Image (cartoon, rainbow, N blue to C red; front, side, top):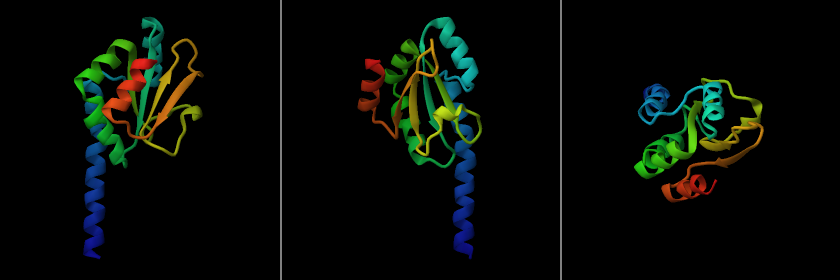
Length: 136
């Protein structure tokens, strides 16, 4: 019983720490946290939105943030081409068209018509992610 309790406590602690870290990530790398605000900026700046959907319980989401999105080269490209947005699907409300059982998942959303988008499920390495965001 003690072993199970210990495991549950560790999982809860890491979940609470992660639940706030995506917001810290957003602040540090200038990502929007609101879909509506991101779309408003996208229309003003005529840039597509790069939406990264994460979850509290997802170690791959954390790896995507730390290993891929934190790269200076990738972040610079994202900031030049897109309005970056990160959303925790457990905390926010996104339209059903973005519902997926997989996280992380990245979307490139057309700023002119947000019903047009491309999705890229799962963790992406730096090389793969750079390839995706540089082509579009």
